[in-house]
Image (tube, rainbow, N blue to C red; front, side, top):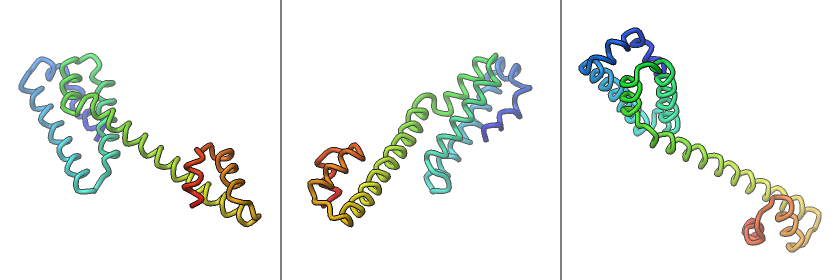
Length: 145
């Protein structure tokens, strides 16, 4: 998908000067974006995959249409502009945070199991959880409960 634009690269000078050609190119990109939205809504691709494809399409367009302001700007507008970048970044950051939380949870469960095996009392386990995992005392108690 991102490299589809190469089909038009040799025509950019004509498209830049012809509103009808530019409008047709925008319609084609709008069609592609709508198809990606449908694929995402139907679960064939994830929202993150959709946003990554669109982001790559914009990246390629910025590079090869550098000298053609109308072509570059108007097709990128069709693809969603800045909003998609923030949405993709939010999805990615949420994934990282969930992964980090899952890791801490699993680490806490493992540490609790080991410390109980060595007959640590609850207060000592809490202290170890706080020191080793960098979590709050209240979170440590949550894990221990």
